[in-house]
Image (cartoon, rainbow, N blue to C red):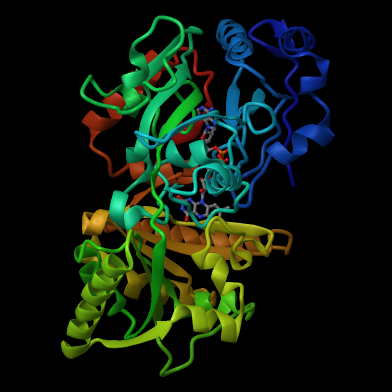
Length: 493
Ligand SMILES: Cc1cc2nc3c(=O)[nH]c(=O)nc-3n(C[C@H](O)[C@H](O)[C@H](O)COP(=O)(O)OP(=O)(O)OC[C@H]3O[C@@H](n4cnc5c(N)ncnc54)[C@H](O)[C@@H]3O)c2cc1C
């Protein structure tokens, strides 16, 4: 049930006056305060508590946003930047009401592709599907790195939240792939960060090529969940799109043996991505809704995509991966190497969705609720994490759904227990939250660092984070957002 606290005025300005100002800035067809339009922005897939915004606006350009930010800053009106709300952390739920800025409708242009330095300059509303189509049609020799998020989710939202995608074993977190940002800060100033910082008013479109070596101000906006300013442009790195591709599907028996397998394959330094999921997830993919793992079945399945500019290079990479897998077998690991293309043909073409990203993974979104503990994790603890989280899942009678990645050849990993659930079944959100809460407590105590954090999660993290970090964080937030207008409440601010 959505909880709506009607606000009649903000710091002395009536809601009516706010509406008039918004009409003046955006035009009456690009704003709404009708409950029917606001409702979709009040909740997301997770069990995070819903809250209605007071207005939604659809911007077309940064000039409108500068005027909006100045007005909201003077009158202390919350603003929540929104792209498609697919973050799975309640990050765009307007905790304190205020104005949703929906970038997806009109600020969604691919502004420039620089083929030479391989980057794309994007407005915030560009989606994965849109970028993929654009590259495949006009620049087929270039590729981006895609998550398991649906094609209608936002590229910039994923990058500024340090997403982990299907080139992550090679390139690491998507936050590292940002070359430049254009942002509007609380005083209505426009700042361009990265090599695009030259140029008084506008940057040369070919100047968004890197982020260093000036002081790196990007960190003030990356992972801040829209709490420090509004991103209006973002340049992300692209990569050569090699013509030769192959994916190894490896099934691993022995609950925790998948950990050394993915760690070791990561270190071969030849795979594009490594993602491993519990067997139950493979069963979900082949349309078993509430799957169980039976004794003797493999515990995990891992995908290792490789690519090469020539067939020879692909074969050489294949050989390296196979040698490593055989070495692991000899050392006692129970590994089955399957042909993923045949597997997909035999069992269900849905499996291809995991290979041909971006795609809608029905097993993730077919229920009304989806929630997770997504974290950056120390890879030496994966065994311990898998074992304990599996026990927690079983204790709560929920199928194990663990998803892991190895990032940047093994510098760090991703550990993400996922739960799908029926949002509208009486008591189900509470039941699922109890399970997730237990998983969170355990994983944080083991040093995992959750990303895209709901407020209840940052509250737990704060108890563990050193006070120096917290003071610095509060000081930066205060400096960037003195009146607390940007996505207030996030990170318990
Ligand atoms: C089924 C499913 C699977 C997924 N799998 C993965 C996965 O494998 N890997 C992965 O990394 N992610 C995954 N995700 C998450 C998803 O990729 C990203 O979080 C998503 O792309 C973010 O984009 P969005 O359009 O949803 O952003 P939103 O949720 O709308 O916004 C994200 C955050 O950015 C802020 N924000 C939005 N616009 C701006 C702006 N202009 N300026 C400043 N701040 C802004 C918002 O306030 C919010 O805090 C998955 C999501 C789903 C639903």
